[in-house]
Length: 233
Ligand code: C5P
Image (cartoon, rainbow, N blue to C red; front, side, top):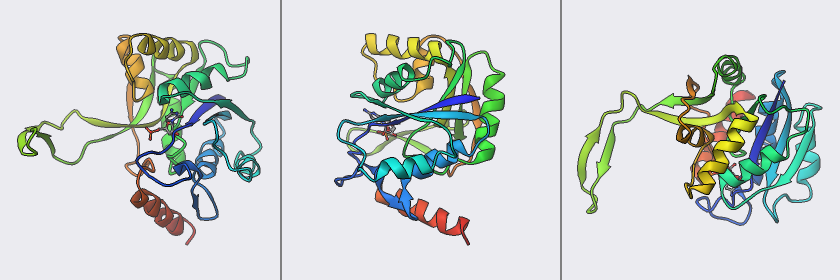
């Protein structure tokens, strides 16, 4: 059984608005409740450490989030200034039963459309890898490099390029050390794999569904609303 850290301390600055995006309501519950439900419905998931912001969670959220947990434990811990700081705080908030070399998952609070089959594949293939693994999707668009004037300087080969998604699966102590090293070097890692790569590790890419998207803009929220409506037809 694997514990999950869910960093949810972001302010959602790109989204705009008062309420952080993970607390916006879709289909009768918050984005975060959908995310927790998608994780905890999996039999391989033991529980969740939710990393929250200082003045986050509306009061009503506590009961709603508990209901999404499929009877599994939900622990909370305060986050930090960056995503990496928040994940580091989450690692420290794991129960003592999680050993140093146990694998843990990290999954974005604002990524509610995680498929059971993808989590299955990540757990199975990631646990068999010495380092760990991430869900990812191959880049399908043609990539352009922009010049300062907005003109195209060139076309980048996309054959070996992947978009990093979450969940990401690493060993508890190795991930903590990698995040610590990145912070000490002043490098703002944007995902867990990047911290591990800086240490010379080569995490495995596990192909996941393209629609495991992060809710970043109002259009993403509308997309998730549509996904839910299709699911319940
Ligand atoms: O900002 P971004 O969309 O990359 O955030 C990804 C995840 O990290 C979100 O779930 C967000 O709440 C979380 N985060 C955090 N602490 C921060 C910044 C982001 O927990 N300081």
